Image 1 (cartoon, rainbow, N blue to C red):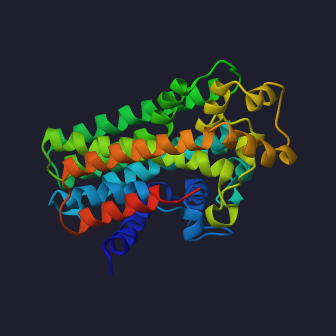
Image 2: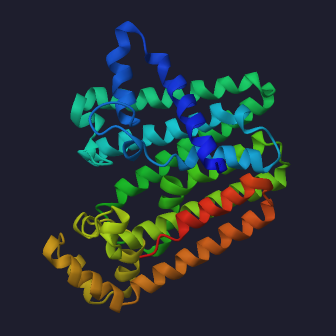
Length: 334
C-alpha cells in the first residue's frame, strides 16, 4: 500500500472526530449539514462528494518528509481541510452556486442563514482542531501553527474580496491577477506545506522552502485550471469549458486577451458572452496567443515550485509522494 493510501483513511477519521463536536441531540441536524457538505452523508455521498483531500495530505507528507511522525500532525491536517471547506461553503453563497461536486450546495438545501452558519461552524472547528496539537507538541509550536493558519484565513478573504471586486471592473491587467489567486488558491496550499515542515521539526530556512513550494504549486495549479476552464476536455477534467467565459471570469487567458486589445477584447467589452459563442471566442483567444502566454506562466510557476521543493529536500517515501502528488496536480494537460 502506498503512503497516500495509508494517510487518507486517517485523515477522514480525524475530520469526523473534529466535526463530531456538533453531534449532540439539539444540534444533530447542524452536524448533518456538515457531514453532508464533507461528502459523508446524504444522496450522492462518497469519495467524489468528499474531494481529493489534497491539502491535509500535503500537511502530513511534509511532516513525514522532514523525518517526523505524521500521526502527531493529524489535527493540523484536519484544520486545513476544515478551512478549505468553510471557504467552499461561503464561496457557494457568494457565487449563488447551487451545485458542489455534483450535489446541491448546503445553502440551497438548508437556506441562506443556515448555510452561512454551516460555513462558520467549519471555520470554528478548524480552530478547535489546532488545539488538539497540544498532545504532541509544545505550546509555542501550537501557537505558531495558529498564527500561520489565521494569517492564511485573512489572505483567503483578501483573495475573495479581490475576486468579487474584479467582477465589475474593466481596467484589469495581468498584474492584478496574481495577488487575487495568491490569496484565493495559493495561500492555503502554501500554509499546508509550511505547517507540515514546522510540525516536522524543520529549521526556518527549510520551512520557507516548503512554504514557497506550496505557494508556487498553488499558482501553477490555478493557471492550469484557468486554461482548462476554456480549452479543457470536459470528459477528462469534469470541468465545464463553457462556464468561465459565459460567467465573465477574469481568468489569466482572458486578461492576456484583454491586454492584447484585439478582436477578443472588443467582443468582451460589448457585454456577456453567450454559450454558442464560446468555441469561436476560445479560438480567437488562442490566435491572439493568450493560451500560450498562460501556458508559459504555468511553466514558470511550476519551475519555481519544483526548485523550492529541491531546496526543501524532502526525504523518504513521503518525499517521493510529495513529488508524485505535485506532478499529478500540474500535469493535467489542456
